[in-house]
Length: 97
Image (cartoon, rainbow, N blue to C red; front, side):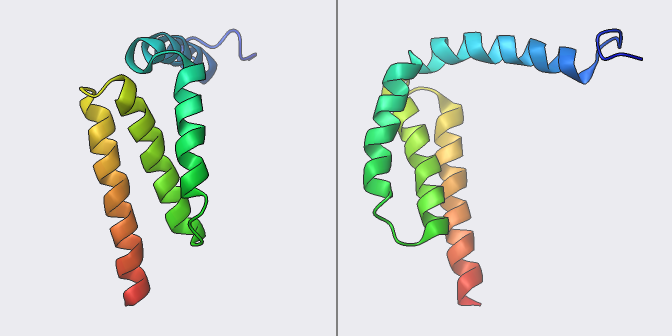
């Protein structure tokens, strides 16, 4: 059976989710150009971190911070920041064992 004939195929599910995400994204976070300009500016500082794993965690945090600049009342981004912070502490904890 071809992918176009499958009812509720993964591709259809993806396309539906993609359409929703891209519409919601602009409403929540603003124009992508502005968001990614902020992320790039913040990442330029984070990239100074010599620890590659911590650098990636910090990169995720600043992505959320850049989004919070646009929409500070978006609770999901605050929760994500907390989650990434906890991941950083878990990583440091595991290293000390």
